[in-house]
Length: 205
Ligand SMILES: [Zn+2]
Image 1 (spheres, rainbow, N blue to C red):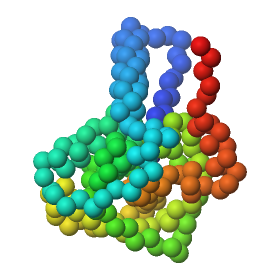
Image 2 (image 1 turned 90 degrees about the vertical axis):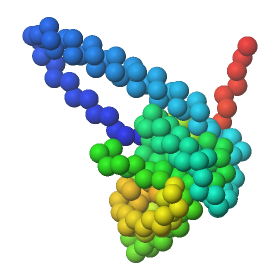
Image 3 (image 1 turned 180 degrees about the vertical axis):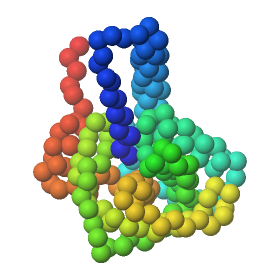
């Protein structure tokens, strides 16, 4: 889902040292490289209105090498696309698997056959982006606390108690496994606006 916010605060000093100038050039090169990787990853992620995004994924029954490779690929693409989560359906793989990493300083997690229990007592509405919906961001109401249970890629049971952004991300990714997108969960006005932005533009050749 939503990208990490990259905040660059450059001090604009009139007396740049040579070293500082070189460092800025390095940063610019690194930014270009990150942008290249982001676009390359997005090109491998199914984009709306790809039919795979509307399909329900099946329970995973084989904890095999294919699953391990799928999780590696999900992790790599999520990272390169600067996302905080990615579901297998977004790669056209109809298996109930997603990865998430709401905090870049914490390790990513992969959950197979996830089951979510929402604490319905508190909900919050925030804007969500999606790696399959281009620049579209729409407000979505989500439970602020969830319990996520399932298996890790080795078939071991996992259980996470999550709140705030992590809770939001796993609800978003779990929706992907049922073919549900943010545009289905937002209010009618924002849905209309989003669908307008997602409509293919006519090309005049
Ligand atoms: Zn998404």
